[in-house]
Length: 210
Image (cartoon, rainbow, N blue to C red; front, side, top):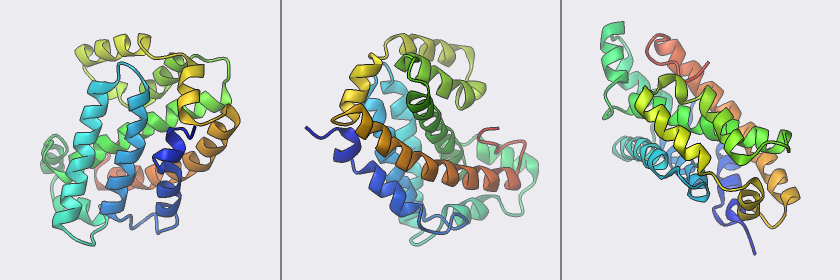
């Protein structure tokens, strides 16, 4: 029976998106691809709240794309931030209704997914909860308060077994890893490009990850 990687179409969606200019990423296609990739958290117990926040940010980006047909993510950020003072950009970055804020957190969320999938493939001795923990450590955790960190700590303990998760991804571990290795480099390059754009706009307020 086909697994999530095949039925979701996530690999093809990201590979197709990655064929374009990384300096001009279509906002509508990125928002859609992000939503698809975030769906991986449906397979990990305890991540419902986190997925909800991620989907909310993806939906904000998609709404902005619909209201600004044909615009790129970079253009949407410029429209909100160009010519603004650092104080004004800080306010934009903290306003959940802005496209810039949504993109900032969406990039962090996708980096989280990227950094949990990479050790899943490269470190076969790690439990799934440990892979999720590694991803969280370098993406969202530095930007969370104690209460949310505690919620994530509980969620990590609820993660299913590694073998169970992989079995949901594809018909075999070999096929799962093959598809993961196909999509992760594309996601990585796109996130690097977007993070560079955000940092160039304002490193103090808009650094998604280091």
